[in-house]
Length: 66
Image 1 (cartoon, rainbow, N blue to C red):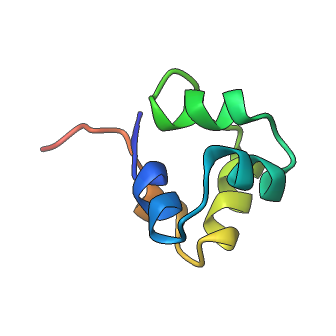
Image 2: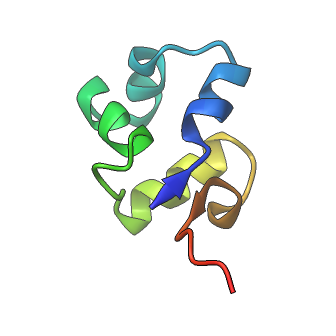
C-alpha cells in the first residue's frame, strides 16, 4: 500500500522516532509503514489521520488506478 506518511511527517519536521512517540509504536514500525512493508491496523490508520488532521484516504492509497 502506498502512503504519504513520510511527506506528512517531514512537513512537521518530525523524525521517525518523534512520530513513533506520538503514536506509541516503535520507530521500526513507522519505518515499515512508510516503506510499505507493513500496513497499519485500522485503529492505527485512524490515529494517523487524526494526528495529521486529514483522512485515511489522503494518507493511504491502494495504488490501483482505473
